[in-house]
Length: 127
Image (cartoon, rainbow, N blue to C red; front, side, top):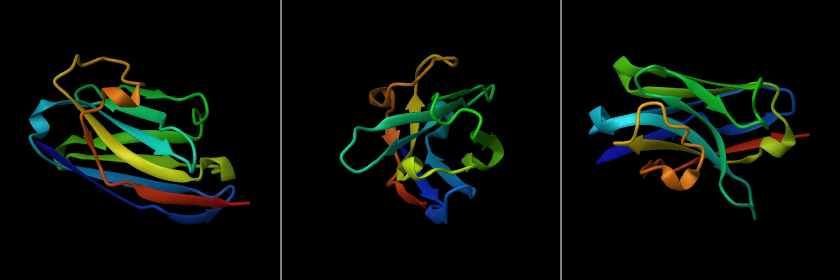
């Protein structure tokens, strides 16, 4: 089992920045990728981006590319989501998620592929 704990959410104004963190514990040696998924009220879960655990390769949704950056600290089993130029439409609960046992360079853009999930952290962007 893998446990994921997010931190860093909050209320910000449009144009501000926010940094989310996700700490993984447990059987982290099995992880091949970690991602961020968000869910706005009344909407389905939306892939935000992912980073591969070994190589640190990143992939982003079109809606956040150029504004959001995912990084990882393997020594601390932590992944970060740096969000810049935030917009009101970025308002959502943000979940950290992890893939276990898959291929190292998978796309993993489908939230259903993720095996482990954090509890979520609220990000609210006011206009």
